[in-house]
Amino acid sequence: MSLQLALPLPLQESDAAEDLIPDPSNAEALAWLEAPEGWPLRRLALHGPEGVGKSHMLHVTARRLGWRRLEGPGLTMDAALADVPGTALDRADAAPEQALFHLINHAAETGAPLLLAARAPPARWPTILPDLASRLRATPAVEVARPGEGLLAALLAKHLADRQLRVEPGVQAFLLSRLPRHAAAIARAVAALDAAALAGGTPVTRALARQVLALDDRSETSSQTPSPAAGRLG
Image (cartoon, rainbow, N blue to C red; front, side, top):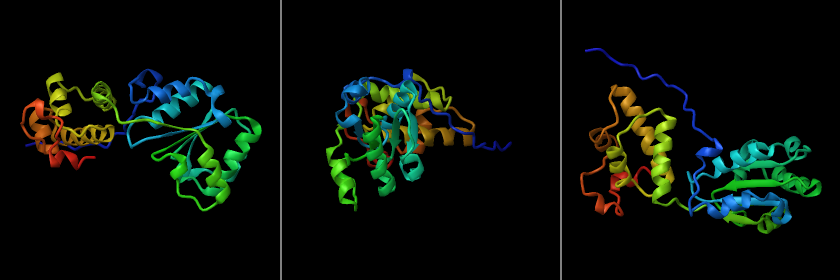
């Protein structure tokens, strides 16, 4: 029996504008992002749970408007004080407080738009600096909610395509009827299936999904109550 080695190929997730799927869960955020000239204080924060598309929206907006994209944990004072057309800061709640404080101040002074993203709204970010806390409380925030059924199906198809996995529609329906109803669980399930399929040299089937994700065989009509095993993916 020959042994197939799974090669750790880099995953190329698409952040193209055409892959940003409109849905009631993100409609308000997309409307705000279309008109940054109308943001109060020239800044806006997106917040919502993991995997709902906040980073994707930041990337699309920054690319469309010619802004720089930064990650909160790596924000430096030099970057905070740079003169730029605009800034999109992901994981903004993890930025060093002094740097974030100066970034907000400098953006306000220069009139450069500032787009922030994190899981919680800015008013709930833990801060020590009182002046930073007051600026965060004043920052307009819009929630990106958990996706609806149509968007979950589109997200599953996108994650499969990003990993170049061809999965029969019936298997995709099987997965959607059993996985937890949030985007992060969809992403983690596809990653687990990809790893298992690559290691075993097999296609993604219902049998593989049942084995890897511990999904059961109940009917699709009971999909609103995911199995405990499936819930561990979230």
